[in-house]
Length: 388
Length: 129
Image (cartoon, rainbow over all chains, first blue to last red; front, side, top):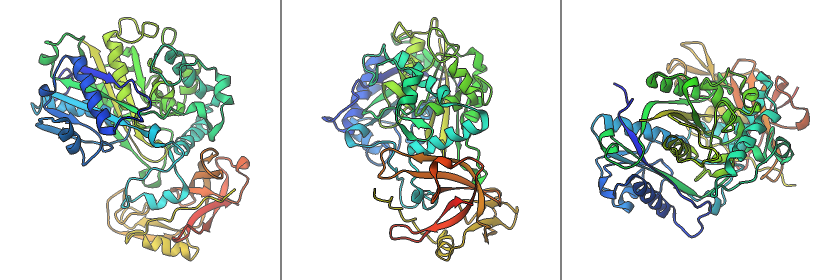
């Protein structure tokens, strides 16, 4: 059995806020849900499946389903950090293919900016974590975890800070056209290198923004999508894979994208060269380089060279990416960037990206995410969509 | 500048022996009696073959730096996080201490030292040989 062709993204909505001091997190979940329903041309009563991650207020999906007044027959609160929302799309397609629901709502919201969270602070996931006693004393945080990956990638493959900076440069070229982006100024490689070092070898401009907000998606069976007035975006392939420390047999220079990507391409019956647009999770510049290598857009170790040739810039590069400005420049709501990756891929396939960054006749797009930490353990997910 | 307070490890029945040994200045790692593989962090069941015949072994306490990063912003004082690959073959997350952070290199030889934590047992860290 396959999910290929079994479900469509019919609604997508990115909250315009980047700082939501005057709103609650639950309110943001409901606002993005309403936005995605309006985008799809559906009503709340149409929803019979609901997906959120573990960071949503309450026990799994229970509080949010109750807050929004949803009547459901399918629930899922898989949490793999920032990539959860890609997995939710795949799981929604599975549920739809099995007849467990018809219209699935996926929501993300959070206020890390208003609440003062940043990537140099430790994050805790509970007292019974088996790994924490062997990691928390050493001050592993988001930034230095990814920085260790970058350092090792540089050691093994000769990747340079200049090459990593090109990821940010490309994102900034796209963000200049997005009126909602937090950082709209086009930056140069030199400006990235001149920004302060946060965690060697990563500079401030190698890091994504911290923003409040959220987003939502509506996934529905094709028969429903065909009766709506929106362009039809169909899921063609999906893969998911966790990766960790392998009991100490450590390899930090390969991400779970090597497995989730291969699975998604196999299900879609496609190869990397077929992809016209890619949303690539850009928690840090190194995250992008790792994932484009592991997805097969270039050879392992050649990602630095690939991005430094300007290949990520829409209109001139081979692999236009994150045309909304991505997490590096636009938005990283709730410290979880998977949702906005799917949303921009949907915009591209609908032809609704900004005209300056819209890929011509975009018929095949990929969304890739990693969540958790590349330097310790992470979840990877890959989705491939087509315009039908 | 104030030195970084080292958060104490959460000691539980499964990892207690590791931290009791650390208090004696000994670094323990787990070896599986069934498949013969070392692993870290320590588990009761081998993450490679899932046997419950895992045993504590004294590690030699020397290894090489697999990767590292000095966190310089948003903290009271810069500190160096690293993975060290022990001579037994497993890599462990740790800190590099008592060394010039600007001279740290991947592949550098290091040896274990123990540092006290804020109200808990000491933990293994590493310094240049």
